[in-house]
Figure (cartoon, rainbow, N blue to C red):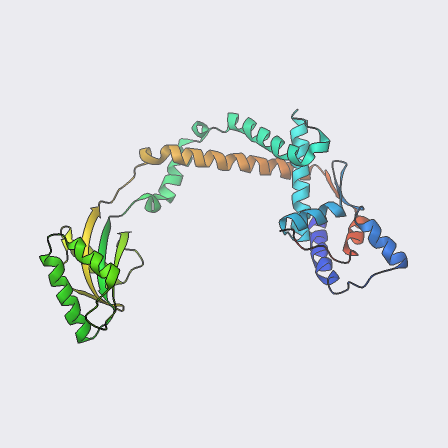
Length: 300
């Protein structure tokens, strides 16, 4: 509770501090000068200074409460790594913290391997994601669009469709309209390739209905009208759906769940070290932090 309250006060005070940036003098100036070095918390005896909080806020664009929390968590993990016999030079602590956490993760890998995940957990995860794991049938196409829903637009689309159906290679018609549009009328004509889409894709329903009603690849029998205008559509590929089994994705699920368990174990380490009473806030130091006349902008 103390931790939460202090974090809240830090946030509020630093917000208000921006309103009073006049240069201080006398006792106030002295108090502000001390603020950058005064201790706001101790973790297992190791101090965290107001300046550390300010530096973390500036470097990562964090609010004061989050910056303080992360500094505490880093120190807890560092001390836990040291307790396990993973040591490093304190003068290189910033880099050492990352090395130590990686070393702890390496140790966890030995205990929490993908193979160690219980079969029932793998099955439960598979069932929870069954729908996401199924790949529906998808269809690729290209279309030539006359961006006009009038009779004139439909007439031009019918003419283009006749060209497509009569062409030895319908793609040549597509390329001509893709490059030049329609030079003979004032109507706008475009040509576009579409990637594979499923029936649930976010494309207008008339287009999807016509595409998935086709029995085979090639030009569709009829024009399709959408809010964009008239479409001449050619179905180019049908990609069958896939129904993945547990066997297909078991290795992937085991790996993901083992990673999750490792990070959960690290979080447990942090909580356990906090529960041991290793975190102690210095009320006076926090008060001095609150008196600081603002912090620099986040570094770019």
